[in-house]
Length: 150
Image (cartoon, rainbow, N blue to C red):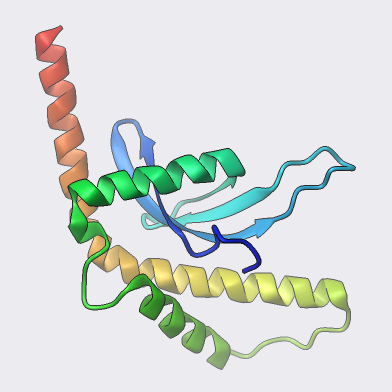
């Protein structure tokens, strides 16, 4: 974890379609190298990407906006917190390699975070799938309506 954005739900717009996801991990900024902090996002559709802090902030706001329109994107039998706990429990049962130094610990931790996030995304994908389809339909209808008015 290490950052408030990790495990946050996000929504991104791609070609008029809304894609939901979760922030799975992050790499702090490296001022000496001039690199900004990067946040790894796993999308419910299986895609993934790295975003800068401002992009994540916008994606979190978009998720909140989308879920206000379509509460089903976050509703369901389990809360996001329960999903993450369930995924963490499943990931902890898997065999983990022994860490020899600090870098090994970071690699193992990153691997576990990714496994937990993927499991959480898979669980939430079941709940969010209908909302994504509904949002995409709504966006396409809005595009058609805008084109008709133009």
